[in-house]
Length: 461
Ligand code: TRP
Image 1 (spheres, rainbow, N blue to C red):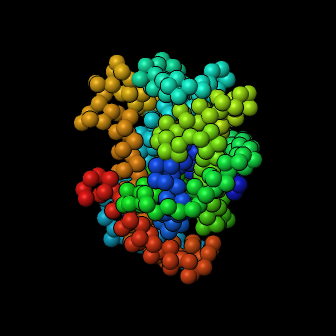
Image 2: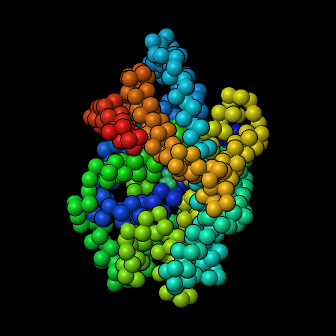
Image 3: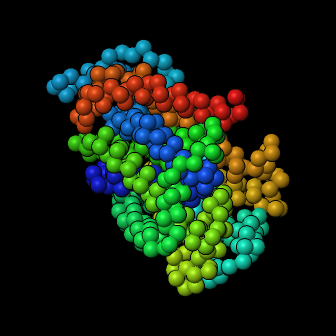
């Protein structure tokens, strides 16, 4: 039927989802903002103690229910499954609140993230073209190039956003096996090769040791509660937890797949790529004597500036870098829309074509609103309570719906789904001791840590 992954296909697709703009664009600039090594340590701790457990939880929810996100919550609420030793499923009536079934609507946030993610991907495609023709060595010009793209070049942005949207739509039209798995099978190794090439080049630079020092020797002076929360938020976003993406992909896992092992593998790939991207970018920046604290403009302003100074080699590096970024972003973009597509297809009986048309149109229009909201001419009409639509989409998803999705999944598995059922699945891939640690983590540690994160981001304390 073409709706199940192969084992390697799943790893690549889950890693493809996790590795995205979050790793190559966002991670280096927040590490820069928080002064390097100490933040990296916090981030690694957040991944290990919180992100990974939430990832495993979402993966199990998909694997056990074998359904789309909305059905998964409903199914596991209306009946409590118990798998006997013979493998038959015994259904028990449940005392769980029927409200749980609404948790599945976390899939909606995929469309919101995709709206602005597609716009940023459009900028990246634009920078691939800029790299071919006109990289500037002048700081003023580099800044001007970026800011005029965002505030004035509406048509250019619409053009590239359209290109990205069509690519995403074209891939998901073909479904999981023929679309998503195939795209990842091609794009992920290419991304790996390009990143590795850039990394090897970075190692050959004198500044590489400086980059290693910056990333791994902790300087605790810039660490405060904001850094802690930023590390936690980044751990969630980078692992793609909280939308139902991992759940959806895991429901398409082959029967014999090992959930714990594949989750660990995906987490290692995702973290490894963030670290490699960070080392590479900082080596480039330090080589040119630039600052590490360039903020969100780091890869759009500071990096091209440095590449421009390296002549033709710089141009080749620049093209490779933005192509890698585009590949990483496309495989993530595809993963944001699939959960909601499955809702339309399986629950509302849409054909895949019609579902893609509806969801594609929604995020396409969302992207138009996001990009217009940053423009000089239309910005004021699309700014609400001092934040433009683009920032609102980012804020609502990364500060509210994603963490909320993560908490709900952990609480659902920790307190609603039958413990023995989860345990029997868990023990197929791991030991009892690890199960106990993980179970306590999803019941108490993740919900506590993430609630603190959310309340703080919402300015409630
Ligand atoms: N993990 C991706 C990144 O780092 C972003 C992403 C993709 C995502 N799919 C997601 C985030 C689903 C949350 C939910 O760029």
